[in-house]
Length: 345
Ligand SMILES: NC(=O)c1ccc[n+]([C@@H]2O[C@H](COP(=O)([O-])OP(=O)(O)OC[C@H]3O[C@@H](n4cnc5c(N)ncnc54)[C@H](OP(=O)(O)O)[C@@H]3O)[C@@H](O)[C@H]2O)c1
Image (cartoon, rainbow, N blue to C red; front, side):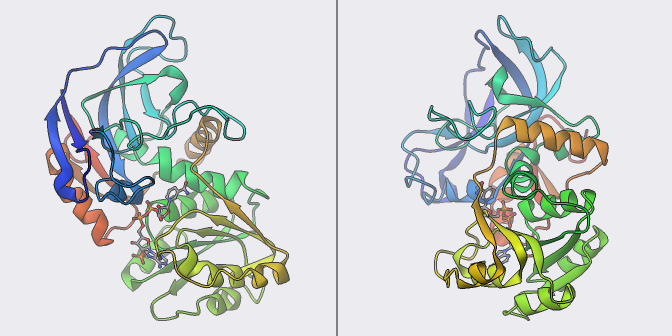
């Protein structure tokens, strides 16, 4: 079968190569999935660049954590799935519920093999049924970006309620999934972006407050102005140290910062004084568990939410897709298809 592999020691996208690998077979409790689509996350850029946790990968590794496909064979004893089911793998192996277990729960795409292959074997414990309203291309965006957004909004700290204000930073994968889920929950959503055209697209998705963070570097003032001084009940904080000060200043009383990303780098003002004055809280998020994924999928179906897919590339265009994500020209998600024409189901 065809797969895209990150070569051991890779420090550039040159280390991302197509390989012919043996087709895997499902063992007891496992399902064989013919993959139809896979999506890229910011972390997927860091792995071949040798800048993800632990530095360059020590072994050849199949790329990407997030994918969707069809179950084509079952190992002995499988009870959660049948042949023909449309599934997504979970981001972590062996993480079903509750707080992170002390036991091993490695993430796909690093440190264990990912999903950018024609066939992938999953333990049946590590997969969920796709939301019935989604195509494979749409569902492939959920395992990391979707679950992370859901965790930040609905699980960490106080759950978002109708009438709350949610602030999402930028218009990448996590932020737009958060925008859609927060809107469905009845929240008012504010969005920041470096690009006015993207802000206009966010308005069409239901965002009611639009802030250009390049033109307004002290954007917390805009957040307060757009909320009559009240601030945001939840900030989906994908920027990290470089944006945290503004996020804390943007909070409503007892609001929460869902601490997710590092897009602005590792330098910045992380003095928590503003958080103290607001009675706020800060929650570290590391994707989430299978139970969160299943809860989110019910919300996606019930509200007929369709994740925003900016651009679809074919499997053979994988390296091009990585460069495109890196350019940050995208709005929402970048997806690769396997065995599907772009735009296919
Ligand atoms: N902790 C976790 O479990 C977890 C899970 C998923 C992702 N993450 C992290 O979350 C971040 C976002 O991931 P992603 O996959 O959604 O990324 P992405 O799709 O690549 O998002 C890129 C977009 O982020 C925006 N951005 C870049 N720098 C920014 C800044 N300084 N301030 C505000 N927005 C900025 C830009 O939007 P505009 O073009 O609109 O300006 C850019 O297009 C990454 O750091 C990723 O590692 C963490």
